Length: 366
Image 1 (cartoon, rainbow, N blue to C red):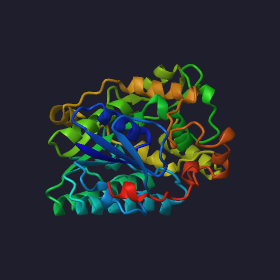
Image 2 (cartoon, helix red, strand yellow):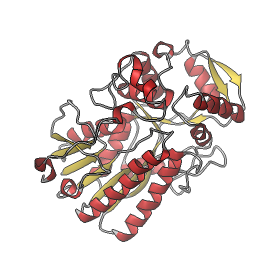
Image 3 (tube, helix red, strand yellow):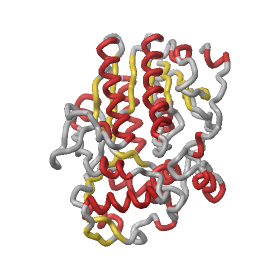
Image 4 (tube, one colour):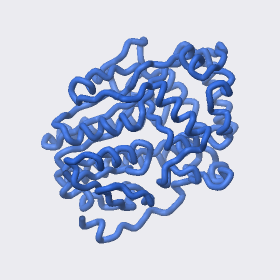
């Protein structure tokens, strides 16, 4: 099989490329990203491609599957930019998959696509995917689901899989996740159990997590097996305020959801954090996912618990762990995180300031 991975150098992307490379059924991989990595992975060629600009059809032609992982979380302060990357980019991906007659599309959706929970009972893949409309991330994930609905109805020959994972962690992605979600003011050395002083005791706080390696295995299975439709991906246990406090050896401080949201809003408006308060609203409303279908239909079982995944990323933040790709590098924010400050803390992502790459004829005609 020949597989094209779009967004191949991020947290999930690099893990998916590595999983596919180890699969004997996969003969070759083309990894697409705005900035090519120096990392060498067996069976893999890289191409610097901007999905908003470049002709994708020649890159997709002849592929047995396209795995679409590209997604921009920042800049949250400039919603038109994330819309162009995520929704315009998604439209161009779907058009190219159809034009190149690719037989399978595996798409990275998210728990964020789901409508708010009604209670703590786990939901299956038939839960509505209308997102939380006030947050850009969840709004765009829900919109992408509607685009896929239309694509499925008009392209019945293409097998479409939608992955809806929980929060995805791994040590090597810690530097990127600190940059995208916590910002430059977070001291790395504090990210360890015993040094994090408090956890908000908020009844609505429920956290599901999954390791990037396990998510990558789900994508590998989806590429190689004749499956379609959506799959929830999450590991046990579900962590609430009590579980997080015990895990982090921290005290719980009673904090109603509105107070937590207000604190996030103040930090956002003071440009102390890169995450808009509406995303906190969305997080506190996420449903708990039931991953039974992934187990029964896809044959997927996570090797890491949610606790192991969370502890690994915290240790990665503490040690400034990274992977040698442009978005995952510890140096992406510049020396002393200077580019994170000068980019406006949520106004842009420092690693995306470079102009779109030119694509070579050799790559375009593969």
